[in-house]
Image (cartoon, rainbow, N blue to C red; front, side, top):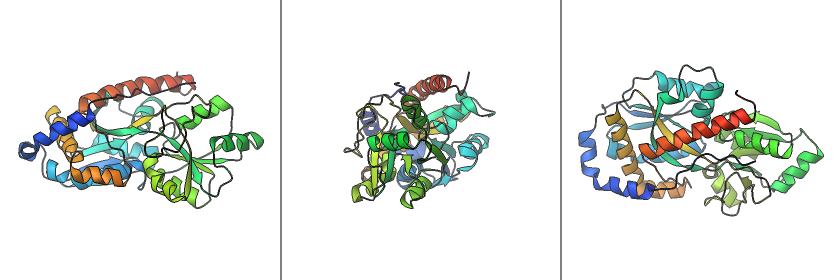
Length: 325
């Protein structure tokens, strides 16, 4: 089984470099007011979304004008954050930072009063690669160990993840369909809580993103078993893909900033420009490298194409697994 979201290769570096050339004029031409910009995250603090968003919040005020706050809202499986942004004044000061789970998947499977067309991408941060991991002293240390243990004692291995039917859950479902394995799913509020449960010995395995565990893997506290992608993660180069282990499950994703569709185009364009300029700055590049965020921003137009492709791809997967008609 090979399900893959649409990923754009591209001109991110060129676009970011172009932003540097217009730095002096951005803030002067701002359509924003003086109120802070809120980057609202539908997960708990400490995960990959939070880590990446804080690179932007620390560097973008110089280029955008207002202060930028990162706000975590993990309630209602992420829909608290989504609805908070949806109901905010459409002035560009309240934005959603999310992977596809709380916005694409929820638009299909949850009873929401918005559609996928009610959102417009501002900028994509990066491609994300869902990664299975455990603590370094667990008996399971490889994909093969996991399969063997799950076959020997079905329904005994606990697996933590956030975002039901999202980035760190849907690959697990596809893997279970591919292999016939049964695991005990343990929902969490986000990557930070999943990591705490793993390190505390409360659950066996977890799914997260490479930036969330890279330092612990490097120090030997955690072991990354495998990545659901075509190629290995540059952040975890020693971790094999599931395809390398013989399992044809590939489901990378993205982390994107969204505005509601009624935010004016000139505001979205300004936010895109000042965010990309900030992320091209030496400070942001250094921060991204330090936290292994792997930030490679895409423009609003590129991100929109990626978003629409993901809506189609995830819709097809949800139909394949019987979640929607």
